[in-house]
Length: 142
Image (cartoon, rainbow, N blue to C red; front, side, top):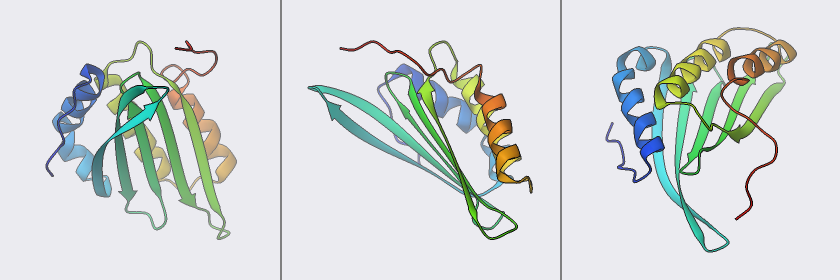
């Protein structure tokens, strides 16, 4: 896979760490893609990386978007045994986390989403994984 180049130090650090962990991650997922985009808001352009992980488990996927201002959006989807689709979204900022810590949490998320837990347990477990990394609440307004 050819990885895009990012100007953001934080996003570049995440890419570097995911490349280091590439082999173990590839054994856990069916496919992995990375997309680079720029978002414009209030005359400010923010770089964004979107990682898409398709898991071996049918109808299970994880999408994580990371912006250059350290805003993060995580979406985990999983088909439940009763046929319903569970969708868990977590968003916030990762103020002090390194790329290594983010990738470690992504791997934990992949492991969790690959299990057969029902929705409520999955949501609670995902929040437990990310609670000390992704912070929500007030943010600086430009």
